[in-house]
Length: 122
Image (cartoon, rainbow, N blue to C red; front, side, top):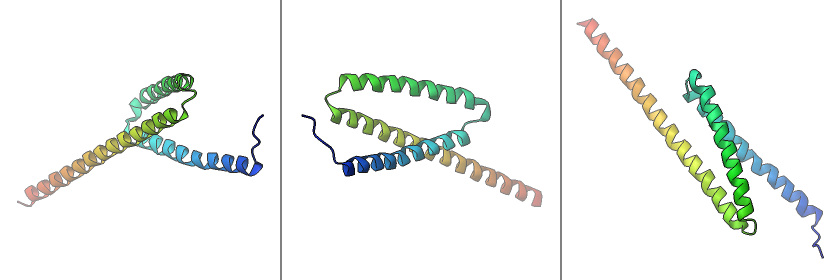
């Protein structure tokens, strides 16, 4: 006998699935913006195509894992959570290094300008 599900639970489930997508889409938009800002225009096509290929490969791996761990949903959730956490950490590290590099370039430019002004004053 198939258990019946209350329509309230079904609607609540659908609403929460919709809310979970907000985080996914936000992360996707942020990741895309960071890539567009930090990658030179001449390299963007290659990088975005490489990213697309990697996404397709990982999608195939996820499908395979779903077949292997079909009865162990907790394993799939753990793998997914670890993958998302790792990607957030790596993106954060890359962004931190980029900002550090940019602030170093700005301070170096400022020091160069100040040295040039001092030389002109002498």
